[in-house]
Image (cartoon, rainbow, N blue to C red; front, side):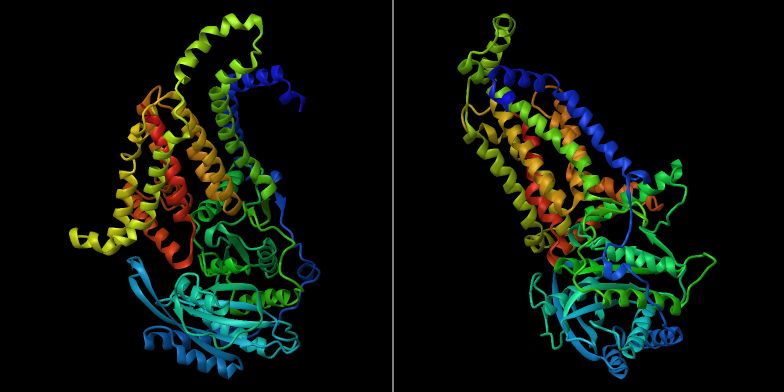
Length: 630
């Protein structure tokens, strides 16, 4: 406290911050990036373990032997699906009732805000079928879900067959303490969202569905199964959910433990764990795995049906069976034993999963990075914004502090006299915060237009231009985004005396603090998105100013705009999955990503598009305004 209360020390500290501001900011950026890169090095991570005592004490004995029955069910389901041209609802109801389940149907209807050209749908009608196995040893207060999406074509038929075989096997057991719901959904995530909203009696996304006729207890955990082959060579686990939410790490560790027990290969992000972690190839492999998770989490898109459960505080994962060219194959009986063991462990839970981590990164399935390890990397980057804002605040208040306190040493007065006179000439006009209202309001109005107009104006666009509704939405969003570059850079001249150095310094001070708050808030929800934005936009935000090479500053700011960040992430993702694409294909994926981002927001409530359009983009426009300040 003495350092801040003593005027002489406070002035010395201000000078130190001003003089060393740029070197400290540069070191903070290098430290933040280096810290993040070091997280993939195995000695800097923690070993995964099961924290929940009810699941980690002993392993259960699996006795599932209905592998052949699962294949038979899958064959019958495939034939019925081909015959009916869609989900065979009546056949599923009949089979589930013959097994001994309480069977219910749920119909739903959803009109999309604009056509989904990727899946060729606009007006979506479907039916979900679910059967409830009541717990014989407890009241229906808690439940577990095993779900499988009914996909088009020959996809996921084996998952449905295995689900029915497991239901038949579980029906004959007496140790269940929780209800088990066997759920089959139609139209992928839309069907799952309709079922979850009806089950919890809420309507978040505007889906019209029938009243839920039967319910089980409060859902404790869920597993979504995707399986399209009679035999598999490995399992891949998906954990990223809506808005970057992640399931409790104990659920991931439980699945990995059962895979190891049954001798099955288990991957994360489609990559097997390497043993040579101390070598450079091993480190690069872990870094790629972690970066793939960052890119998927940062997109905010659910990577499976499990991603929608997380919104309701239900821990869930999606497991996908992979049948590659590896020599060792695993049949339906082995897969069923693994799922049986998982559900028996979940059946032992006395409370919701809570003892392990909810915020983490996974460079491999055996090691993880907790929030306490990766947040310092983000903190170093955001500290740059704080330092630059502090430097601007000191500059803005320096002349007033000198006049009021009169605390300059006699030896320093002659050296600083000329510098003070120049600063006073530049800062003598004080337009106040009122002059900044126009640029700030217009920047945010442009963001609101980017959020509302693409969907609202799609009919008008299709009437005047030869484009489809989807193309109209995407191109309108791009047009508003680009048009925003020309709107705000002269708005500060609406009020007389606004175009001063004090004006742009104040605007930059507000922009830096605003950006720091935005990134800090989103990092607590979706660290990956916050880090990706921070590592790109913070350097440009720190250096932009109306003096100096304007062309260079403008080019730098355009290169770090959120739209360019999306383009970089698409290209980087395809490089990491070893499926490189050209510039034209990258542009097509870019347009598709914009369309899917809007649909995710309107269909499932994704926050990524409104966060970028209403907050990040206006903040970027404020920085753009600073470059053209006159």
